[in-house]
Length: 468
Image (cartoon, rainbow, N blue to C red; front, side, top):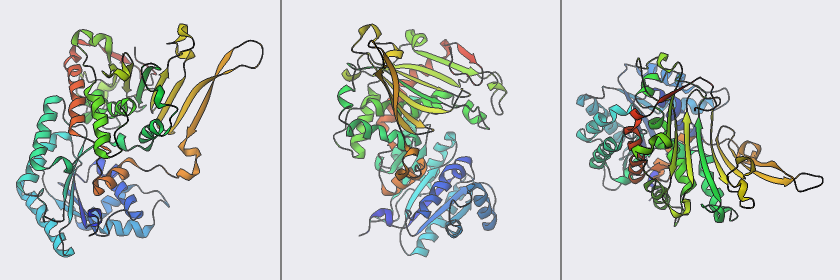
């Protein structure tokens, strides 16, 4: 019997006319198709409310793919578009889901067998609950056979707005799907440079013995963007920095840095190791929130399109976190993210103690620093010290670095969504957040959100390098 990933598969995209589908999902699927990594028989069924004829929809999708000259063979693009089908419907209308179910049945009949079904909710989070109920009521989630034809669902972040809403969404999903069928997307986990943290730590014996509080002074995780809202004002204003990237991207980076070596590199063991770190994050008491958390908003934010008048939504946040594991006793993790900053970059700095000179143990000028550059210019660099030529023992810092782009054998870095979609078809959940991870991250973040009103909203100018 062939692996289930090779069985005919239908990708159902709710909200296919939206930004996420055109910017991420469809280009990733086209790339997978051009590399012959999709099942030989597949279909992409788009579901949205806009009226299209087949040709209008085909041209709409082609225009949204934004294909660069020479990026794909024209024949591949044409054949890929032939696999896309459109079903017009309203997200809250049962008849629309019946029409969708009938269309999926027609495809199965034309193929002469039951197909896999992958449902992706490419819609705003406030629509999740209604769509999930409709999927259940229309029996779309039921496999069409006991032996073949799995059903899986892809959920984008943010997964809830706090602990309570995350629990409610998880309970609803649990009624429809088994945990093995649920794929919660945090696309940062699929970034090659982020995955390289595990390889770097556990494949190089020189570093792991130093990976503890005896040698590491602090860790600084930064996710900065130089842009403002760029048309996302309404969506962003309902979230803010801490929900948009803090509860997910940044905490997942922390988990990869702080996790113990898993028992194996299976999806279950890796997710458990990440979850253990997140469960051990020390809650920040309300009386200490002023010392541990900074929130800010760039000047001009409330003038952005879609932003509510007088909005107090933060566009910047800095948190001092601590992990309650003996390995990380008294080691602060600084988590920082912001919009309209001086530059766009995501990186993790690991500061090592100056164990030879206790006077300068915590002096950043005298410390070795290991930096994981996640984006752009993916790579790793280490700051170390050498003797300056001449009399006396005077040292100066030098940089040893590696960049993926400098190594031609690596080729083009794979796209996040390309990797994620390939993994969901094969059933590999390693790069997807588990229920335990989601709940543990919200358990840490929710008390901070509850104390927001007690924090001054600091203003900063666009292009700032820091917020004080």
